[in-house]
Image (cartoon, rainbow, N blue to C red; front, side, top):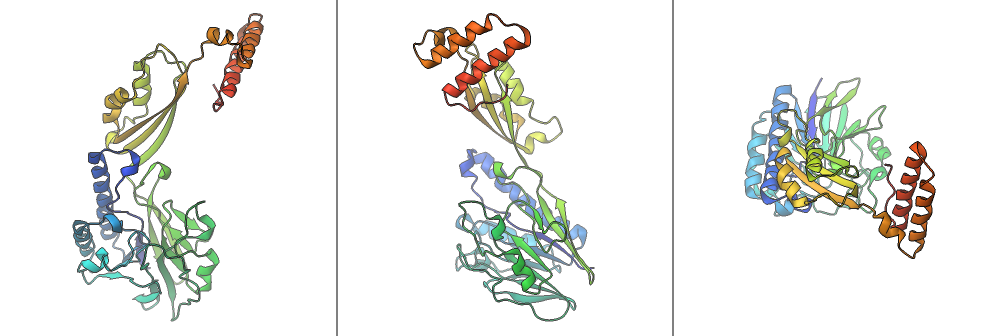
Length: 377
């Protein structure tokens, strides 16, 4: 039973500039992506797979360096004699200045340089067909008009957009519909482009996106994978293998009942896992929300300095708002002032749960007046 280890969208040399990370932290993240590729090669050797496939966006062309090119060559060379097949994508297209053309690759590496499928026999009964992007904005369907030929099982390797899953406002790259894969006569497609892992259709998959092996931002929270594909005469069995070591997480913390800055610091630090090594793997965004009491000495920069060492990276988002001064609001000659006076007058006759409900209604009403999002309290 031949086995193939597949990944895509590693995005070596990514800047991480838009995430607010300082230079040293962004450098660490880029190194972690290299470590991920190194671990991928280690896994291929440990699993004794028959081939390795990479579905594009292995690196980011506009920021790539020859240092990265030589790193890739050295890692892929470690696989020999296991063959490695690369289908360039929109971020690492096969263009004249690309690393794919500048580096002298070892004999076990095949790079599909054209936007037309080329066959490579993996065995007498298994053929891999690969195609690559030759520019950053390929809008043609690579599968249109194509059909495999020859005996046995056939696999496709390319970087493209399943049109059923294109995010709103995003362009589709090498777009295709799921039915296009079967129409080619191929039995399975190994893909790249989308950063979340997906086997499709779920019950009987005919194509797979492994997703990014390591998450690249807060929009990629959760587990990340590489794909192990087992091929036999009777079946093709894809298996997603958990792979990431870095985790992005977003947390929310309501500060409405907090009276000291120390309590806010403790709340932030509570999100850091106590497991060994968590500080090196958790990239956290903590959103502080709710009413901030006037006696709290809130200093976002100070909290970042105090808590950052508990995380690989920490981003604190201040979505709080000042607590309402009901006495001051009641003095206003406005609709809001009238509302406060009315509710407070009714509250004088209430107690227990009814009083709590009235207090909540007062806050919700003021939130609505100020056009704030009304959150459960």
